Image (cartoon, rainbow, N blue to C red; front, side, top):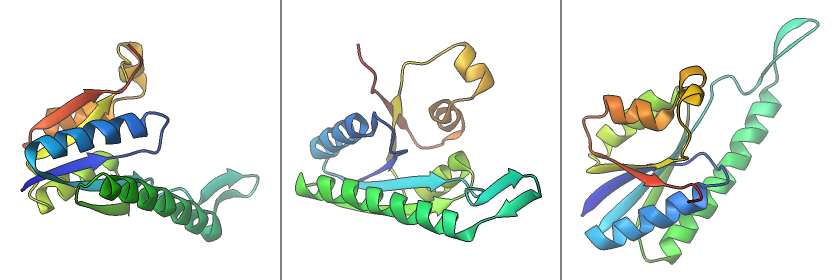
Length: 146
C-alpha cells in the first residue's frame, strides 16, 4: 500500500485537493494520512493590557478544526479510500515533514493555488517550502480555477 500525506487548511480549495488526492490514492492503492496544523498562538491576543492568553478560544478553535478534519476523513472513507488524520499545533512545514517521515509516506500531496511572485516574497508558500525541503516526492495538484 502507498502512504500519502495530505495537509489540509480548510480553505475554499480543500475539497478540490481532497478530490485529487482520493483519485490518486485510488490509482495507486493508497492510504491517505490527513494532517492539519494549527498555529501554537491561536489563544493569544494583544490588547491594552499587553499579551493575554485565552485558553477557551484555543480549545474552541481546535475543537472546530477537529470536527472539520473528521468530516473530511469520513468523506474519504465513503469514497472507498483508507484514511487516518492528525491535528497538531506548531510550525506547519516542520510538522508536515515530520509526520510524513513518521508515516513512511511515499508521497505528500499538496495544492497549488496559482499564486506567484510578490505573494511568495511577502507571505511565503507552504507548498514551495515543503517541495524544497522534502526528501519524499511531493505531488502538487492545481486547485485553482483555470
